[in-house]
Amino acid sequence: MLIDELVTTSAAVAATRSRLAKIDALAELLRRLEPDEIAPAVGFLVGRPRQGRVGVGWRGLSAAVETTEAAASPSITVAELDAALDRIAGAAGTGSSGERARELRELLARATEGEQHLIAGVLLGEVRTGALAGVLADAVARAADRPAEVVRRAAMLSGDLGETARVALTGAAGELEAIGLVVGRAVQPMLAATAGTPSAAIEQTGEASVEFKLDGARIQVHRAGDEVRVFTRNLADITHRVPEVVEVVRGLPVDRVILDGETLSLGEDGAPRPFQETMSRFGAENAREAVLHPWFFDVLHVDGRDLIDEPLAARLAELERIAPGHCIPGEVTADADIAERVSREALAAGHEGVVVKSIDSPYAAGRRGASWIKVKPVLSYDLVVLACEWGSGRRTGLLSNLHLGALDPTGEFGEPGGYVMVGKTFKGLTDELLRWQTEHFPEIEVRRTANTVFVAPVTVVEIAIDGVQRSSRYPGGIALRFARVKRYRDDKGPAEADTIQTLRGLLRG
Image 1 (cartoon, rainbow, N blue to C red):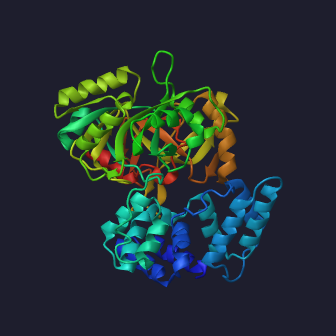
Image 2: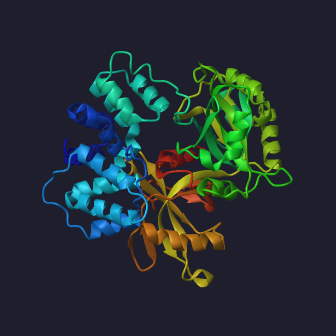
Image 3: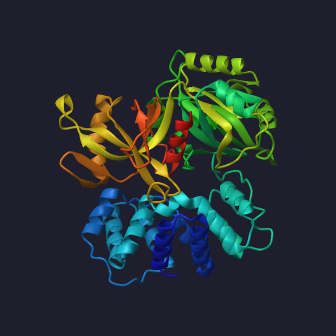
């Protein structure tokens, strides 16, 4: 199949707001793929090629596109694009940058303008269909005539929608249903909704485990015998960067286990150090100044027994048995007063707040629902930087005021999978962040005016707000109230940003 057919189908999906029409278009495409094309094509559609990051950034890609004339007619097949990414990813050693640039130019020279846009999106993880992975999973179910829930579960537990699609469309009877947890293979983490107070959260969940919300980095740890692997929330393998976490898990009284938790640095007084110090360990290959301590709040598998479908109460009992010294503090209660007290204790200890989890809830991999609810004293949301304005006064010469966008997965207020501007802010920016912004944003610039640098929507920033208000200024109909920067989230991708629908939901409050 030519990748031009992916371009055409992606355009058709983006042009309609009908979920059924999107599913039909994608299912029809999937049925025409050859068996060995299925996994690569799905990876291209969701912006996650099987090669992962191949060493091509925005600047190198922009330079290649600007100096390469697009082809007049399509000729690149799915298999050829997959092979080209293999070669680009495999370039190593002296001269590898030049080799990657040459391969990229040769690929782009064979691509039409539409295909060039698709290739750019694949390389940067910014294919618009990527925000519609749920729709694509339903399309796989439609094309394969399989139950949608079975396809979604297999994709969540395997962490690979492309391979799930291949099995669904070509596998033997029962093969799709047999996909489950595999120790050593990362799964999508369960996510939490947001509430304003612990009392409000308890009202939604009923009896719950009210746990400290640590200001750390999410980790998923797998152990099989002496082999331990540690993954981030984005499923990146960082085992070699966190030897102290590996050592702790090797010391647990189990042979095979999958744990979910957080890790962070502590000061000499036992209080948590700033989030940036924890993240510096994730981003550096050899940094050892900050020692990381792991805390676990869930267990998905223990010694041959999958626990994801068991209630949280059973999972917590098992976690306490195998890792009693590394469980996140918390209490099980249905009493709002107790939940409020635990929240005050968490804040007094220097943590962010609490997470309130229904004691009866299973582990819903990859889902954000009402079973887990995070509560912070100030509302905060993960948004995407769309542009940055040049500062004035003492900030002259520095990029300062951020344009902030929320994800619009359904296209209710614009392009499906695009970002809807919801406000601006320069508050909370330290001198260090101002310098960083001024260096970083021109590297991902897409265009500029006299006062503003518009950037690729790939940078996630955590913004604290006091709420939202109705506004006709922005297309989503709302504006942030008293927005200020908390931190940049290097551990999150733009597809994980909070949605415009979530922010609009605050109006009801």
